[in-house]
Length: 136
Ligand code: ATP
Image (cartoon, protein in one colour):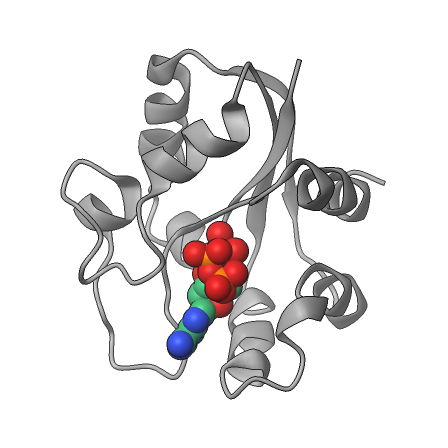
């Protein structure tokens, strides 16, 4: 069955939302295969966010992701990649639909990076690549 990488990013962990986010994932019916608290170094983040290198928000994004621990989750289920991204909502939390993680818990804090609580892989290829980075 399909697997994806979910991250509860540093803002989600710092705000004490890990449990609420996990509850939504479990209520949806996906299976937790592995879960760990990670304090990623710059090298791990450069691998994870390679596609964004050079973009204006790249440096703020790496700084934000090094500002505290994230919770990395290996999640399994049929169509879990699409399903988790639907649970998460769109990238910008201001306009993310209510009922989604980002729409219910996120907002614009006026920073150079969107603090949007979670990450979810966007394809099977990304999932395999990212799972290898966070669960080595
Ligand atoms: P993720 O990959 O984290 O699930 P996503 O696929 O919705 O989010 P990407 O376009 O891959 O978004 O961007 C990765 C992350 O970079 C976003 O989740 C957000 O934290 C940050 N980001 C993306 N676009 C911007 C932007 N225009 N300004 C500030 N930060 C941004």
